[in-house]
Amino acid sequence: MIHADLEKVLAWRNHINVRRYMCSQHEITQAEHLSWFNRTLQDPKKHLLIFETNHEPQGFVNLNEVGNGGVADWGFYAAPDAPKGSGRQLGNAALSHAFAQLELHKVCGRVLAYNERSINFHIALGFQQEGILRDHHFDGVRYHHVISFGLLSHDWRLST
Image (cartoon, rainbow, N blue to C red):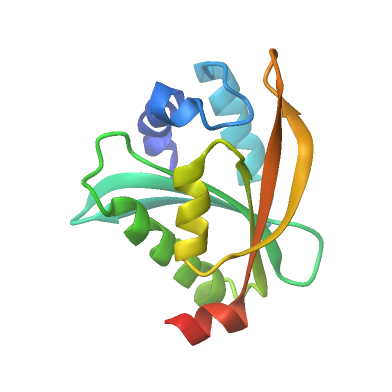
């Protein structure tokens, strides 16, 4: 991701079909977005990626290495108008990059329990459910469980 991608990524992130599945569900301002981007650029353990098909941006991926040892949290979303199947392509490309180029040992994901599409997506990509964080996220009205997933590089290589 480069500076020229900021406007597009912000529009995707603020789209209601993306935002409603985020822990932070308010509309992100341009100032917040730019501040986040500039902070992220300073951290070599944070990797911001734009997923493209036929040179057309179709989604965003954030890989955030935590500590040492090659473990990273990931976040992602397809563009709201991305063609059907783009999400699966985005996931495969991001995981291939994580394990082949970044040489990560493990990728972790957290999903709000009401986001069944993302839960099924993680399972389809080979992630294992590693836990349930009960009443872990408060949206301002009520609490929601958060499902934790993990995928080891060894398991990814066996499935590809």
